[in-house]
Length: 335
Ligand code: TRP
Image (cartoon, rainbow, N blue to C red):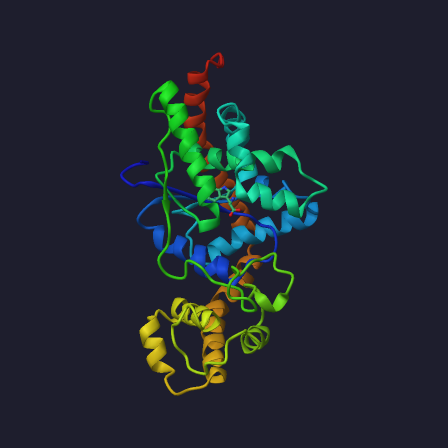
C-alpha cells in the first residue's frame, strides 16, 4: 500500500514495433487501472539489452514508448512513468535477489529456453537472470498487483517464490504480488495464423497491426487476414479461430459484445466484416497518432515528465532497497 491505494507495477520493452495486441491487451487496460491503483509503469530498457540492440535505436524506441504511455491516456502526474535504467535500485536489488534464486529455477523458465534457442550465438548471463531483474522491478515498489500476459505468468510465479523465500528468512520485507489478468482483449492473435499470439517479432508484417501503421495499411492487413470457408460471422473457436480473433478485436475497439457483433453481421460476408473491423481499429488508433505527434513537438514537457517521475520512482525504490540492504547485513551508510 502507498497511501490508501494498492500498488500496481508493470513494464514493457521498447524492442520491436508495438502492435495492436500490446495496446488492446495491455496498455488500454493500464489506463483503466490507473484510478484504482498507485501505478508504476516502467519502460524496461535494462531488460532489452539481454539481446543485442542498436544503441541509437533503443534510445529512440524507449523514448517513444514512454510517449506512447502518455498518448494512450496515462496521466504522468498520476502514474509514475519512467525508464528502468534511471532508477539504480533495480540493478541493486536484482543483485541481491540473484543470491536468493536457484539456477534450477531459472533453467526451468520457458522464455529462457525459447530465447536461448532463438539467440544461440548470445546466450548471456543476463538472459538467464532476466526473471530476477523482473522480480526486482516488482518487489522494489512493494507492488500488490501486476498486470501481465499469460507469457509472463511463470516469471510472476517465480517473483512470488523469491519474495516468500526472502520473507521467510528475514520477516515481512516484500509484498507478495498477485497477477492481474485483464478481461477484455487479453489476447489478440496473429492475423495470418490465429493459433499464434500477435507478436512484435513476427517475420510476416501482415500478421500484426503495428500501432503506427497508417489507415491504408491497416485496412489492407485486415482484408488479407486469414479466415475460413464457413462464410458466416460466428463465434466458434474450434472452426473459426480467425473470425473469433477479428470479433475480439472489434469488441475491444467498439466496446460491443461478441453476441452483439455476431447479430450485427448476420447475413453479411467476410468482406464487409473485415472492413468494419479495420475501420474500428483505425478510429481507435487515429487519436493515438495525433497525440503522439503533439507530444513529439513538446520536448521540454516530455523531458520534465522523465525527470520528475524518475525522482518519484527513485524515492519509492530507495525505501525498499535500504530495508533489504539492512536485512541482509550490509553496513549502514554514514551520512
Ligand atoms: N518481461 C516483461 C515482458 O517482456 C516486461 C517486464 C519487465 C515486466 N519487468 C516487468 C512486466 C515487471 C511486468 C512487471 O513482457
